[in-house]
Amino acid sequence: MPILPAPYSYHNHSTWSDGTRSIAEMAAAAAAAGLVEFGMSDHYVLIPHQPNNASEWSMPLDRLHDYVAEVQAAQREDIQVRLCLEADYFPETWRELPGRLAGIPFDCLIGSVHYANEFPIDGNAAFWTPLSQEQVDEVHRLYWTRIRELAECGLFDLVGHLDLPKKFGFYPKADLSREREAALDAIAAAGLAIELNTAGWDKPCAECYPAPDLLRAARRREIPVAISADSHAPGTVTAHFRRAAELLRGLGFAATVRFRQRERFAVPLELGGEIANPGF
Ligand SMILES: [Zn+2]
Ligand SMILES: [Zn+2]
Image (cartoon, rainbow, N blue to C red; front, side, top):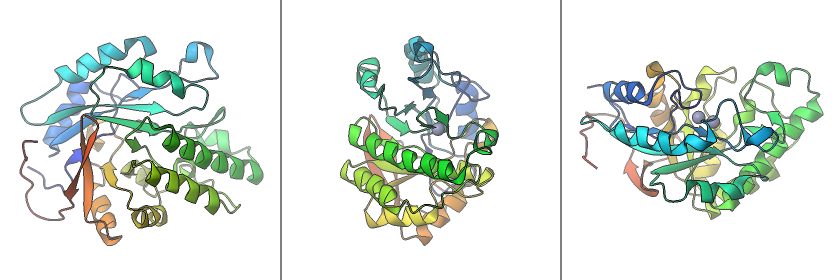
């Protein structure tokens, strides 16, 4: 079995949203890669500015219970498959989420921001190219405001890919430290965890989400961190996990977190040795 420093991952996608393989195929890949817990977290997006709130990269909104059943049926002897969801925070639609998600035994609810108003932050670099620097600044500013609101809404367990607007390498020139700090303060006040999302290392920004200085700021606030690959294909279920663990250790983190039934548990961040399945 491969040696992994933090063999838990709660942010991954299947063909239920924008992933490339079935839940069963992703779970099999995760077991083969040495994970002991693997969360499926397909997108559930109530987009306010589209007819019927439908998004092309979300699961069909009326099929949530079929998705849940398929995740539950994917349990395996060699890995714990966790029931997660990546839901978008929008100020216009977040109040609909509790009713739609009620009664479903999620292990972890990931809250993400993929839009600044109607601007699709991580859709395509070509959307960013025509923006003026002021507009780039405004997308970043609005993003941090939405993250603060996401934390304040109290619905989620884990904040997805903090720092997403850097994805294509369009950075703000305005000083947004006030907005960033307000968002981190809200995350800490709400008792939320954040991800070290390794997918950013393979994007044009060539840096994990969030940047190390934001991880440092999170540590100062005692915000816990989970390592996630945000994988959309079997080959990336544990991408950069060792690098992520080493970065966290270098920043002074002694633990990561795992989730079960929306409870969070700290686990020591081991950088060596075989990890035995603790049979959690
Ligand atoms: Zn996302
Ligand atoms: Zn994702």
